[in-house]
Amino acid sequence: MTGEFSPDWLGLREPADADARSLELVGLLPRPVKVIRDLGCGTGSLGRWLAPRLPVPQFWILTDRDHDLLEIAADRMPEGVNVAIDERDVTALTRDDLTGADLVTCSALLDLLTAAEIDRLVEVCAQARTNALFTLSVTGQVRFTPADERDAEVEAAFNAHQRRESGGRLLLGPDAPAYAAAAFEKAGARVITRESPWRLGPQCPDLTAEWLRGWVGAAAEQRPELGFDAYLRDRLTSLPELTVGHKDVLAIFE
Image (cartoon, rainbow, N blue to C red; front, side):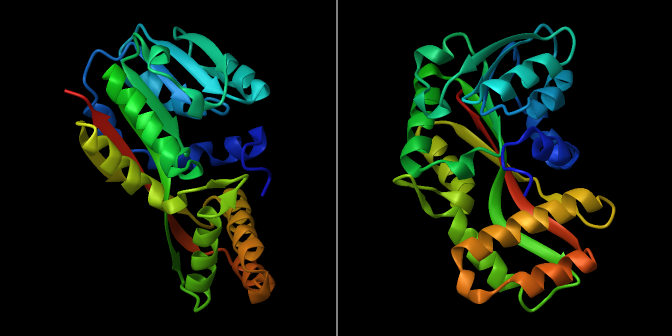
C-alpha cells in the first residue's frame, strides 16, 4: 500500500470515503454545530465532506500527530471555515480540550485504538457532554463478486492483523465500532449506527488494486505460512466487485 497515512493513499481513498459515509447521521446531529474537533484528521477529507453539510459559521480544530498532514488539512478546508491545528496524539485528549466544542468527529480511526483508549475518549466526551460522530470504522467484512474459495482465509488473517499487539497496545481492529457504541451507551449517550461500506471494483481500478495490495499484504504479514501471492496475483489480474465493511457511530448526549 502507498502508506496507511500518506497523502497519496489518503487522497486516493477520499472519493470512496465520501460516498460511504452516512448522510443520515449528519442529518441527526443536534444543532447548532459550530465548533468541531476532528481527531486524526489526516489531510482533512472528513472536514471537506462534512463542513459543506453544516450551517456556517464553523470553527474546526484539526488534531493529528503528523505536522505535515495538519498543514495540508488546514490549507484544503472549504472557504469560509475557520481552522486551528493541534499537533498531538488524539489519545491524550482531555475534558478541557472539548470546552466549547459541539462535536467530536473522526474518520477511520477507532479501529486503530485499544479498548482503554476508546474508554478514555468516551469518558472525555461524556464529561464535556460533547456529541461524537465517528465514521468509517472497519468491521472486518469483505464481500467479493465473483467469490473465491480463499477469500475467507485472507479475511480472517487480515482481521487477526487488525487485532494485533502493536508497541504494547492491543488494537481493537474490527471490534472497535461495536465496542465504542456500547461504551457510549454505558456513558449515557443515545447511540445510532449505520453501515458505511466502501464499494470498489473495476470502476475505480487504482484504489481497488491498492486496497487489495494492502489487505492481502497485512494478511500475509499475519500468516506468512499461508502464501497469499497467487491469490493477490489472481485478484489483480481481474479486479472483482467488492464491498469493504465500515460502520459510522453517532453518540448524542441529551
